[in-house]
Amino acid sequence: MIAQPYLERIHALLASGQRRLLGLVGPPGSGKSTLAQQLFEAVGEQAGLCVVVPMDGFHLANGELARLGRAARKGAQDTFDSAGYVALLRRLQANAPGEVVYAPAFDRSLEEPIAGAIPVDPRARLVITEGNYLLLREGAWAQVQPLLDETWYVEVERELRQSRLVERHMRFGRTLEAARDWVAHTDEPNARLIEATAVRANLQFRW
Image (cartoon, rainbow, N blue to C red):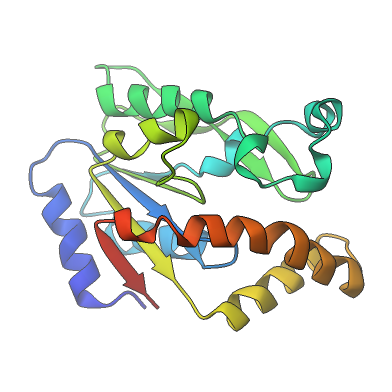
């Protein structure tokens, strides 16, 4: 359940009647996608049309990660097409009349991005995008926050976040040992980098 003050913040974004972009940021396992879905369900009708566009659709393909020697670090900041993500946000912000913008999604069962999977209708008033690196100030990532009307940093206790990640990795095929190893050596270094960006958010969201 989303607390009323957060919903009021959403309604304030929508008050202008213009398209608004909300960014949800936090480390892996913080519940960003869950929050995005709950906000979608809570304000979708009032927003006219609301759509969720995850940053994860810009994962580099597994074959490209292997070619670059980054497969063991999948999820790190340099394993995404950050410039492509920025280009999409610019199109979403511009909201050209009559233009449907197609965004990619990420299929966890395949562990691959899927191009053109999310249509964003020009009538959509609220676009919620969620991901790890929306507040970074390195490379193309530095261009993300200025394109967003607001950014919310999603906080959760570290132990809960890590247990969620282990469960997620096991659900998609890793053994318990392999899941714990991935969390310790891949997810946690990324989490520390992301946590350092929290002060740049407009709002700290707490479950």
